[in-house]
Image (tube, rainbow, N blue to C red; front, side, top):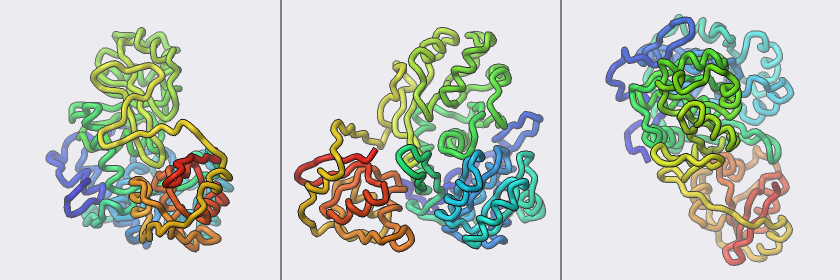
Amino acid sequence: MNTTANANLFSRLFDTLDDPNRLAIEMLDGTRISYGDLVARAGQMANVLVSRGVKPGDRVAAQTEKSVPALVLYLATVRAGAVYLPLNTAYTLNELDYFISDAEPSLVVCDPSKAEGIGAIAAKVKAKVETLGPDGKGSLTDAAAKADAAFATVARANDDLAAILYTSGTTGRSKGAMLTHDNLASNSLSLVDYWRFTDKDVLIHALPIYHTHGLFVASNVTLFARASMIFLPKFDPELIIKLMARATVMMGVPTFYTRLLQSPSLTKESTKHMRLFISGSAPLLADSHREWSARTGHAVLERYGMTETNMNTSNPYDGERVPGAVGHPLPGVSVRFAMKACPVDEVLACLSTKGAGFDAASPNEIAQAIRTGVPIGKIHYGNTIKSDRNIIDAHRLGVRDFATDSVEDVTAIAAHGMITKATTGSARRLASSE
């Protein structure tokens, strides 16, 4: 855990910057952005956010296409002590209504073409609206261009929220996963070490930046390592193969690799400058893994993560990378396999007594108690999400295993479709609604 005075992710990324002129981002048009430029732009945008009424702890929602200003918005939000909420650019207005109503941001940033529709939704939660287009232009960047670059990074604690990402909703309605400053920083620093990132690395960044892989893994890891990234607006197989001649790392989803395998330009010669290919967000077929190794001489490194936790496991940098496997737990991470699932009603039958439980004052205390097996018996779960957010906040922290001695707790959670696993102190039975 971080022990510095300011645990703000931005401070941990940039306070020890030794060379402001070091290259951070290269764009397709040849624009080169240094680490010093990135810090200055984040300062300008943070000043704009504050001038729009954003306070520490406020949510800033963003549905914007990938661009450098969109990345700067993330950094500026964190720097201002607010909570960044990226939203998939494919979400419809109906879907956005749910996310914005649930998260209650104080500011929403969107494409200028969607400002009217999103503005009506934002008005329901009294949020202001700024615009940012695919070209990096909009009311937000117009204001930032006139703002002061100097900005005092807001002090944050390890457990303060830095971001909220909504899950994909595969087991029910999407839920907001709450990610702290220490969560994002510690996971990134672990990956820098595990994947041997250095300031000599050049990342091909072709992922979107509205989810964990492209934003928190690709971007944060690169910046922590003082490496640089070639920032691409979208995935282009032939362009990426050409860029491999001067890059060292690529992170992608399995479809990146299957589409690259379709190109005759993908050879051992075209990939000889690369040192690492990382795949995640979905399983890479073992056949694709083996074909990639045969064609390029490189074994793809697969890893496994979740929206709620960031990265959990990884194949080794040194050693065999097994096709179809996600490797071992990262340092500081433990993994438990649940081999049996029982219906919810069987778990309710197990929970026949109420224990003294654990009187939790915060979501983080609940999460810690759950992780260490302390029974949770005094959480007051109201009729709506607004009356008491503790249980849902614990769920958003990525806590999937919930131990309790209270039938009421399990009943309340199950009623909201949130129960994934439950155990009793004696019977140790598992339940699953999935």
